[in-house]
Length: 142
Image (cartoon, rainbow, N blue to C red; front, side, top):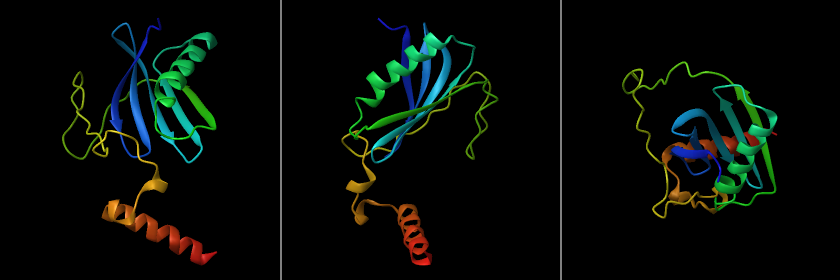
């Protein structure tokens, strides 16, 4: 059994963020971004780890987080960094040391990731429509 546990901190239509835990101690975090056929992961570890330990974490992410998502996966691209948390910043309230922020999930009702290609215009909020209009404008400029 793996010593690593992933605690989801946020989820949107095309991304997820997890704290990486080992024996009740946070050792890092991973952000997953689901594109059409590829998955991109950024891992930040809070301590030095061996190449084998990093490979084991990537394996766990691939087998337990990526494989369980409802998107196609042709390739998994992973960047790994070592660093320390400087703080959590938000427009709402200051994040006090030792407190964990409560982040909301941006999910559909079935608690599934939604592939951008599956969204109808009526499913998009105003910000998404603005982004979509920008994409169309960029294509017009080409």
